[in-house]
Amino acid sequence: MRAIEHSTQPARSSSSAHCALPTGEELLSAIRGHHIGPHPLVRVACQLGRLHHPDTQSSACAKRRFRNALARQADQWVADHAPPPHPAATLHTESMGAVIDRLAQQQVHAYRLLMTTKPSDPTVHAEWYRLAQLIDDYTDLATAVTRGSRRLPTTPIS
Image (cartoon, rainbow, N blue to C red; front, side, top):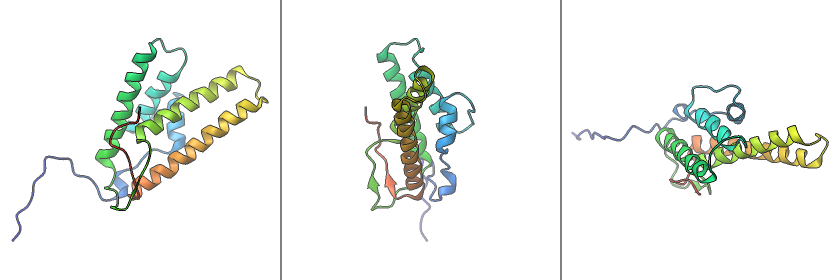
């Protein structure tokens, strides 16, 4: 008879049902401060959106430290809840927290540009198109991580 092993580590689910990552739309809504759901990554996205807003009264250094802390918080949540990656899973270049930070930065930038530039300006279209690309990339990454076909770095890339 085999001994039962006990672990002090939280159990990692092998089922993708336990790693429900928010949709890109949920993240964008939270970044804009509209609908902030209970998911921890949505709350991180909301805080990152506030940090990227030009009216935030903090030094660039303080913002960067807080952004890195939020990215690490997101990374830890994913590490604790995502199924283990397949042994042949490829490594993504950015952590999930870094990806969400980049989404927040682009969303705030695109919205600010829309509010301060003529909507017909090609730059406005280019920035919103870039945001759409980032959302597609996030969606692909979230799907791959949930399926275990992609590994993430253990720390955010600064």
